[in-house]
Image 1: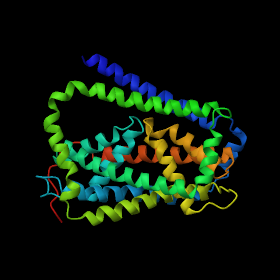
Image 2 (image 1 turned 120 degrees about the vertical axis):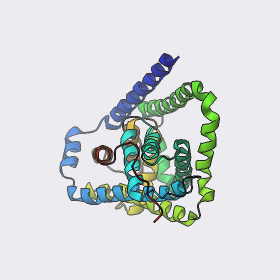
Image 3 (image 1 turned 135 degrees about the horizontal axis):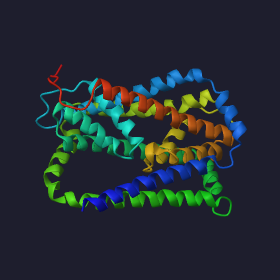
Image 4 (image 1 turned 30 degrees about the vertical axis):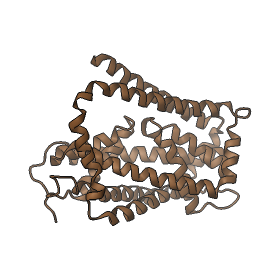
Length: 334
């Protein structure tokens, strides 16, 4: 019985990699390679320091927000996990996501659970609360972006119309196909475990209830707002790095809009959003903001590549510094 499940999992991984490679090719198709190399060469790499700082700060805020939910888990409220420990688990999750799509949430919960003897399903419930909150913010951001940029977005959809760019429709169909296969395979793979789901669901619901149980709901609000504003900064700083120009200079709020649209690519189950992020980011920069294709491709490749290297490096350091396994002592409330 395990063999077919492993076979389906392997098929899922191979499909994910295939979609990523195809979308990267689609994103860079037709790009003037010499102009692309020149855009990468002439970038102002002094901006790497603030990019890294903004990235790490955003994930520190995510860990600080998670701390509120973790502290509200039943039977675990007597201990308060330091933000540094939660940050370590968050970075491991991001690292794993670049190899196995959507497994990062499981990895960070596993890391924290084994180190601090916390309920894994309950931790997964707190992560679900985080994801629901982030999806609401993403939806709101996309609605505002669509209202403010409705004219430019219409141009983007016209650009990928079937008569002009059939590959665009092929890319969209590929994304939809990947999502359907991904969730279909996950559903089938989970069937042998259904007999154990009752206890897990109860613990998971306990994790979901932490949003109502915690007395620090205000912290959830302002940390979520600050985290997403910092994400916008992570998208805007590379605009300065590559000196991207459009009919009008791009502002921080344009960076925020690019980030909201780009997140849609990361939601696609490819390793770390590879390919899907490149595709939607290049399309947005060229069709919505009028950026030259080589510059848009350089921006997308740098942003994704820099995050990949950063997450792999920090995740590896965390595994050495704070490896999985029970700690000898638990941290008490400060």
